[in-house]
Image (cartoon, rainbow, N blue to C red; front, side):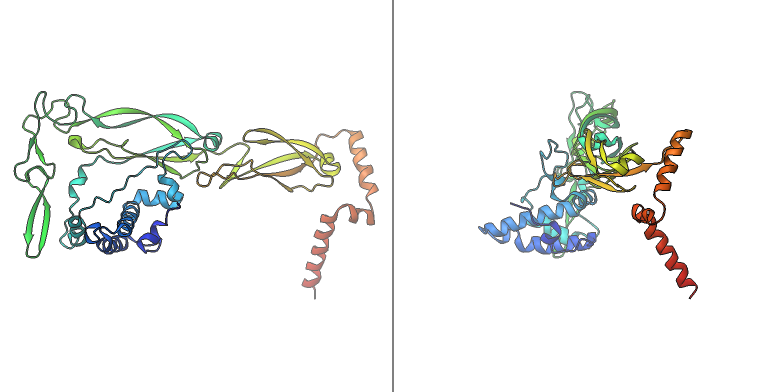
Length: 380
């Protein structure tokens, strides 16, 4: 079943800002939350759609991927590649939504502890046109924080465990009441980590992570273009003290090709043909991204004529349809002619004198007729 557009799900326009997205989500989430609609399967389904849309559109990077690729950006297994991944759940506590509604008023958000998640990273990758069109697997090396293998991410010295913060009971948050409202704040004692380390690991100085070079094998789907980006979930920096890792984003730039130019999913190339071939017609070989292909040149072909070869372009990363190859023929003027060759051309030129020339050179006739009309209008 085709998914509904995320913007339609939240009832907002594509130009909506972060505040508009939050307001719409909070209003709809309060309305359709399962706790308020016990046993209502339709409301539960609606709530799940709302939450999924919010989790994408409220994240700048995910929203950019969705705007560019639609739902395909988060489908698993598409073209053998599952870098665009996301998971959604309806297990949102009603109080969490209530907290989000009023958290901004007091400058506090119940999800502050999530800041311990590792940072996202970006890797810029250059591809040849062939690699972009056909897809390729590449190994990359990135310097990043990884979980410390000495303390296994706990940040404590060998044979010791971190202590739970007694002040916040390990939640990283302190809850206080202000009249009708219940406000959550970051625990000052553990700085929101929920743990206290008395004997820090000597290798990572208690952080639970160390800087290393990581080698990844990245499968790039066919059809990638310049400025496209894919996400490798949890391949960014490791979070401190066993907190979740960030994501790795790979930004692509396709290098300029010596033969082809790309426009979306179409490929263009220029093919020189001889004066004789243009006049008499024949068959020539043209390059495609997969090899050579023969096409017929009709007689009396003019320079600049475009020949379209269906399905020989680039396969779309979104709908899997293939673009076309467009070959523009350029009639090449012969050079380094000897005396006999020049004499033959003069004979041909003399045979085209008078009314015959106008018949044999229709483009020249149209051009000079247009020039004559132009000057006639100037002198009126």
